[in-house]
Length: 351
Ligand code: NAD
Ligand code: TYD
Image (cartoon, rainbow, N blue to C red; front, side, top):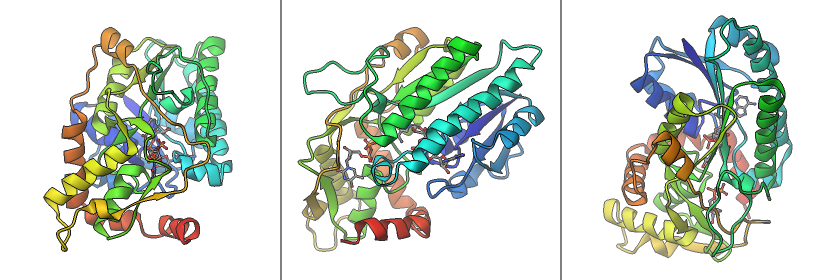
């Protein structure tokens, strides 16, 4: 049997495919449009694996998706494909609506049509990978988000993901499509595009650029090492109950300034600046992001208690591995920051 991974050339999808092929006999078809965020280089180590098959294309291309589902007799779809960066969604929401909402709708329809023609319908799964940002923003004393927290998305990105979650839910309740939805906290680790906080800070630090902290730097995110997210997704796919939602998180709340300082400390230790000063010298506070959510925190008790998942990394162990990976893979960083991403950065951050 084979699984269809969408958006598998991005950050989490590529980690998922590498882990999957390392732990399972099953084949993987990776359908990815290769936007600025998709990079086949992420999958170099599996590209010659006969169980891995890459197809460049859009989740909104119903004909293509239907052909793949039928040709490979897909037993599960894992939907990572999305526009994923909040800042980009503020500057240009259109692509977010197109891929995250319309694309997910079309993918669901293609999956429904394929699944309803299957002789044995019971084994098929549609796993939709989503975010905790759909729940909105927490105050300092609020309890962490649970699966029953109200949807209160605040950015075009989170609103488009919230819409996709609702579509997935409706396809279960209306058509019985066997879906699973996961809402995960902020990920970090290898192959993350250097527009997101952690790889951006590492990249800027090493190239002597400012480390731009939005607002007062006291916004809180709940960090999870990407491989722990991948193991949670495998657990949900294996053991999750269809129609259910599972929150994923590792209980690692940190302010942005704390994260940046930790990164500077690790870089000071592993690759000190030539002038002997700390990378903290490069921190600058810049204008806040519009509508910036103050705090996210995930309660993952359901996943831990019902399905027996637990993260393997603490923030301390995961962040060390991550910094080391970026130091060892600076060529990757240079390659992904070429081309369209570099032009986009120039347009938006040239001031
Ligand atoms: P990413 O931006 O690194 O990768 C997205 C991938 O999707 C890219 O390879 C891109 O080429 C592909 N893609 C975009 N539009 C497409 C389309 N129309 N058809 C096919 N492929 C398309 O994103 P990521 O950080 O790996 O996130 C993956 C998923 O996980 C997203 O759905 C995101 O909402 C969710 N998520 C991310 C985080 C996080 O911290 N990064 C946390 C929770 C949930
Ligand atoms: P980001 O990685 O964009 O993820 P998200 O917005 O989905 O949580 O940002 C993480 C946090 O870091 C968020 O509070 C915004 C902040 N941030 C900065 O302070 N400076 C930056 O340059 C970036 C990219 C993010």
